[in-house]
Image (cartoon, rainbow, N blue to C red):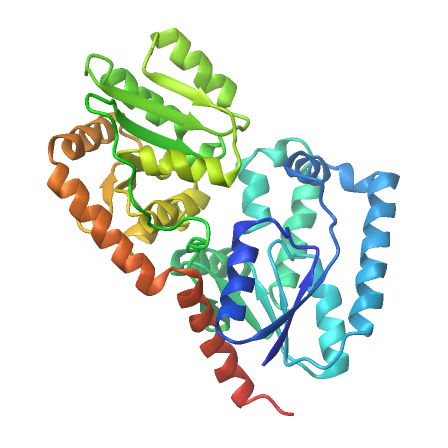
Length: 380
């Protein structure tokens, strides 16, 4: 089978890297037809806030899509074209190209840019742009032959908001890139080393970092407890101000770092934290950091949600706590510190489940099976 991975998708984004690597590990020949459009998060936010009307962006947009058109017209034979994330505008061109070749089109939707825009308050900056994004997303979802999503909860939301039939979706979990995040010999920590609680990621509402800081405040009198918060984002300044206000000496902020260094931090942690935000996006997804902690055989604590409970069992693969209740997170941390056997059992169970279902190869095999089933009934 030959698959063309097509569009302006974020080539360095873990979701795209995992799916491409997974398909290749499953024996599928994957060629990438990619042209970069975006220049980072701030660029995407600026465009969604109305910057897409600027002459500079319009010129960039036309240049990129003309190059994609030329490359797409000159592709060799292939069985399936697949648009990566984000591909909300790529699918319009991809649909035309696949119609010419009479080949199926699959799109990994993964996240709604309309929902992301709402959660970041961009509707307050440009209501007309938000309406355009919603309409464009609605039509884009109707173009591919099949859609890929990570959880059934997200599929339900897309059905409710855009009226897309759930039968058109394949479920492929987020997973983690175990070529990078993999279980290894845990370096022995020095005696009397602090019990380290690690968070890493973007400081946005989805992840609920202020809840982590409130939990640290509740645990401020506990000795030998250290919180490490790794990353950047729009809520980081607020979080730093909270730590200063509460005079929390055992909460340390660490700038974002290369993945090789991040892996070392995870190895040395005693507990890895997931997401605690109460936004729809956070409740409907299972974040990479959860799977990455499992891949490295570390116990993970995260906020409870239907999406997480549909996949992972509390007290077996993960420890869940209430999302709007810092006391619940604080108690979870104390429980796992007081019961090292329980903590180790959760880590081992999570790792075993990850290897079976959420590693790169497992995800690739799952997606390959769905592609093969589709092609069986596709006219040659």
